[in-house]
Length: 421
Ligand SMILES: Cc1cc2nc3c(=O)[nH]c(=O)nc-3n(C[C@H](O)[C@H](O)[C@H](O)COP(=O)(O)OP(=O)(O)OC[C@H]3O[C@@H](n4cnc5c(N)ncnc54)[C@H](O)[C@@H]3O)c2cc1C
Image (cartoon, rainbow, N blue to C red; front, side, top):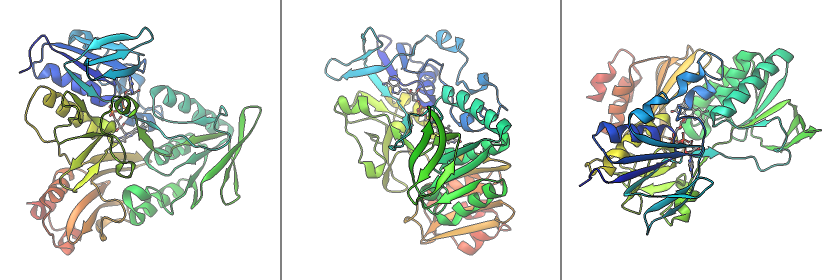
């Protein structure tokens, strides 16, 4: 039984951590809630950093999860700009900040998120080499893109994943020259496979983005600290004033690892292993958001989901579990993206090798359609592109795991609800 004398500590003030704190109070927890984050900004949402905020269409204030006064009002002890550097599982304490403050916890939530992977090549220390994870990164990149647009400058983006493509779109809107270098044959290969990746390549080409597929950056060439070009492993050299490394993110597991918690295999995305209640191998420690790796019963595999919705729902689920509520965290992974005038939502999980066909419903040429990734007539994932209000039936089809008639699935005149019921 949870009582008012208890202390719940949350490490990491991203969306998962902030939503967990909110849920603890909403569920009536009256004990201490301590939220510690190494960033100086109040908890914020990251999707606008590569979209509206980067484009100057959304205000800085709009990205925060709660207004600053909310934390004091809800008696959340917020420690910003402080890193937790140790968890002592025997004493049940965490240590944080430069003065090594130690606090005791009854329950601990690790919501430490992920960090950008680095390019391990010469030249990454040049001033014009960027990453995009934090608000401060987005602020800087915004200035860089605006200047490139003004001066006809050129940015090379390493990686045609979601962030690489969204920044490519923003850069084009600013008027910068853009080259995207990607080792796979199409954009978003690992997430969508080749069939749908080409659609994104076409969209970006129409907006003037150049792609260099099947190649990796090997060196960023510079002079006097300034980027001049980016070289690839096939001997090409792309002129560049700036380079963005958008080559994925790694879960921030150092704290969990040092504390001896079980860590998932890299092949499964790494991350802190949790059960269906988001509990780690220590029953008093939970993990949620980008850092957590959980077994998903629907796909019968261990997943680490780096999506906004997983932080939004996983943080609260972990909070409820910390309060002893009975639950199973088995939400269908969900993701959204906006590039130029194309908006999309993706539900499910179907990387290459897991599906045997992609069924298209609607007009892919007009970029108004739903794609379904299907294995043995069962829907594993669905992506709606410029078609809205269909997430529920798509997720229901995935949850059903029942065989569907793929001709009916492809036919826009057959209501999706009738297939999902
Ligand atoms: C540019 C960008 C665009 C994105 N766009 C989309 C999108 O369109 N759609 C979508 O679904 N998802 C998107 N995502 C992904 C989504 O933002 C993440 O899934 C989400 O932020 C994960 O939240 P989190 O709370 O788990 O982790 P995070 O947001 O990473 O927060 C973790 C926090 O913990 C802090 N921390 C880590 N270790 C410590 C420590 N030891 N001590 C103290 N603090 C620590 C970190 O600095 C960070 O502030 C995007 C991500 C980025 C970077």
